[in-house]
Each structure stands twice: as C-alpha cells, then as structure tokens.
Image (cartoon, rainbow, N blue to C red; front, side, top):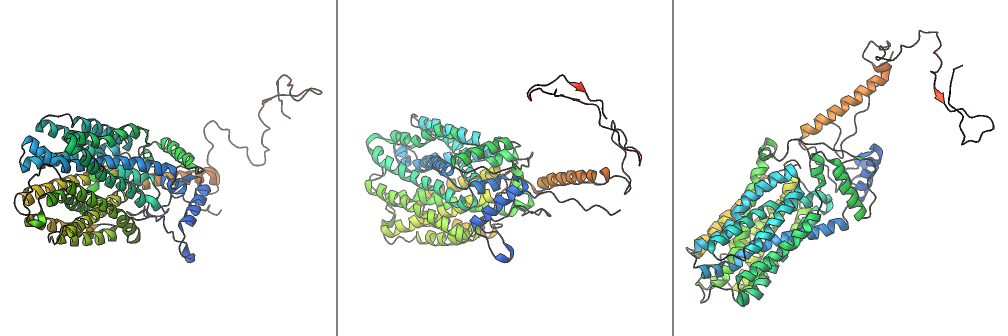
Length: 586
C-alpha cells in the first residue's frame, strides 16, 4: 500500500512566509511587492492581492486589515486630536523659555535658579517616560494617554496659582511627569493605527501641531505678558491641555496591543468601527492573533538583536535634542542680549520687546520647513539614509551660527538649524516604533525619550551657564561637539523600515504557535488516513472505547438503529403531525 501524501502546511500568518522564520521575518514591504517575472506591483495591486489572500485563507492579521481599510475620515480626525495633544505639550515646554526671565526678576533668581525651572520640568519627564512605557505595554496605551492628559491639565492650571519659587518648581515637576507619560505614546498610537503608506504623513501632521503650539504660546505671551503678567500666560498655555482632557477619553485602544494582550475580540470591534466610519466593508474571516505573555520588559530592548540600534537611537535622541532645545533657549537670549553687538545685556531684560517677539515668532514659523523635509527625505531616501543626510546639513548650520554677520543672517541660520534638528528627530521618532516590536515598543521608546530630557537639560545649562555667564564662543563649541555626535549616531542604525509592517511578537512565540498548529494539522490528517494511522500500513487501528467493532468481511452491516420520527397520516395536512411511533426497521 502506498504511503499517503503529506498534509499541506498550515497557512502563513499574514504576510510572513510559511518557511523558516528568521530574525527579520516581519519585513514585508507594502509599498512594492515582488511580482516575479512581471516586475513590481503597485500599492493598489498589492492591496487587491492581499484581499484575495484573505478571502482564500479565511483569516487576516492586524496589518492586513489596516492596509485593507486604508486611510480615511477616522484616521484624519484622530490625527487632528493627537495633534492638539502634541500642541499642548509643545506649549508647556516652550512656556518656560518665554517667562523665565520675568520670573527671575520677580523672585530675584540667579542664572542657575532660572535654568532649574525648565530643567526640572524636563528632569521629571524621565521617570514619566519609563513609567509610561512600562504601563502602556502592560496595561494598554489608552489609560496612560488619558491619565497623562489629566495630570498635565490639572497641574498646568495650578502652576498659575503659586506664589513662591519652590511651589512653582514642585507644580512644574508634576507637569513634567505627565508630559513624559504621553509624549512618545502619541507617535506609537499613530504608527500602529495608520497604513504604511501614510505613516510618515500622519506623524508629520502631529508635529505640525507641535509647531503651532510654539506659535500659540508666543502670540499669547505677546498679548498677555506685558499687560497682565506671567500668570495669564500660564493659563493661556493650559487651555489646549484642558480641551484634550475632555477629548482623550473617547479615543480607542491600539488594536496591536489588543492582539498581544490576548483580546482579539476588542481589536475586531475597533476595526469594525474604523471600517464603518471610513465607509469600507470589513475584511471577511477571523482575526489571527498571537498572545505575548512577556511584554513591557525594559531589558528586552538590549537583547543582541536590538543592542546596537538601541544605543545608536539613545545617542541620536540625546544629541539631537541638545541641538533642538539649544536653538529654542538660545534664540531669545541671543536677541535679548544683542549677541551680534558683543552680547551685552539690554537695559530692560525682564520682558521681551515687540521686536524680539516678532523674531521669535518668525523663527518658530520657520520650523514648518521641517515637515516637508521630513516627509520627502524619509520616503525618497528611507529613514536611515535620510537621517544621515539631514543631520549632516544640520551640522553645517550649527557651525555657521557662531559667526554672526547680521541679525537677519543669524535668524536664517537659527531657523534652519531648528528646522533640520526637528526633521532629524522626526526621522528618529518614526524609525523607533517601526524598528521595535509591539511587545516592547512603548517601553523602548519611553526609555529612549528619557535621553531627550537629559539632552534638553544639558542644553539649557550650556546656554544659560556657559553662554550667558561665561562665553558665547564656548557655548557654540559645545554645540559643535553634539552636532558631530548626531551625525555619528546614524551610522549604527539598523535595517531600513520604510514601508514595512510593524512587528508584534517574538519570533520564538510565533514559531511555537505555528509548530503547535502544524502538529495539530498533521495529527488530524493522520487520523483521516488509514483509519487514524499509528499501526502498520493496511491494518486498521482498534475502535475507540464505546464504539462497536466493524463486522467481519462478508457479513452485511446491521440496519439502522431504531429512531423516533414523526409519522404523517394519510389525508392530513402538511402542518399536522401524528403521534410519534417507533421505527421497527426493515
């Protein structure tokens, strides 16, 4: 007797191949898929093929349904809400650089005490980043976003009611903790719910609101500070936070977190909501899921496959934010203390003049240049090569800022430095959630963002303590050093992530579940062949307990067992039934 053919392998999970699983198994590119001899497929053709595969296998993954539904009104509306949240955070960060000089005059503060106000806000964001990352990977993105927004709103308002320097430091420290909870989760949430084609655009939209937040607080300070004082400026800064405090509870959880946490039904409900809102028919079949029991562990980001890139991203965020915050805090001082005229303080340095507000507004508006730079460079060059190119050009403007030929030239140099620094950080911020899998995405991003705070703190010390109190030249030399660190960090970035799906699980988790499913398929196939298999070929196995043995060869099988059925009497209507009688057999 011939051996039965082997059973077919189990269906692949999503876009992953059904063969051996490597470290880089989740790198299917959604922008261009290989078509074999026919060349490359377009995005539309690739999506049509994925839909055909979904219908063929009767199931779909999170990435398949995200790509199938596409970008629609649901995404754009929540991009706007996330943008307002990003705007609120930018306002709270830029606020200190505007009112810090007035607070120093009111409370008679030294330069170090003035620096401590924004520095402590950033310092307290460090534990917020770590705690927020762990909680988001363990309990979900939604509760952390809501809690962080409430903290920023409540204590942002309370910071306008303090009367002493110590009270202000305490309240702003709590605001910094809330800032750390959610600053990176906005990018994570955006990256996880948007299709790959729109991921860079969606992240850019949130940072358009970040720049609008800088404009918002500058205009508010211009209208309110000289007439009403710093307290009204603080209340003006808290207004976007209050708005988001009431909007954030209506947001949805990330479907990717629902999958790794073992709640695929919730993910399906969210996708049904998104599909209905976008007026798209939901995918047929059921949602494939791989629950990850170990998630939110900080040390997992330092495993060998992540170690080099993790260290490179830490260095990039640390040095990049040193340059970015340095431009924010140095710009008003360079204008206020007449840097191009020798750096001597003006007669009244407690409040910014109208011309200084104007130049500050122009420089912040120039930050909008970072958005097209980020989008075009990341899509044309890829995240890794774009980071190298943008950081190199940024370094040239950092060097040029030292030589103040004219105030107009200085404004252009500071504007380009700030825009390029922001574009570089955007590239890093979108690369980070694309590189790390879902089970450590938030905790890894949160830990890396702690070095954003350290970079900002050291940058403020460099501006206020080195530049203002010691030498402007020495301040620029420090900026040069960190500019070279930014460029150097890009050489250790890992694989390119543009157009690839976001990894969810550990490879060993997926392999274990696939092996279990494959063994079940082989077991069922073996039971169907030769009566269940397990014995010599051609010899049927013994019957299961409680089942009568088959009759010997040549003996006809017994008739059907007695059963009860309704008997219809002659002449009765089809709806009438006679009493049930027993079938006596033939």
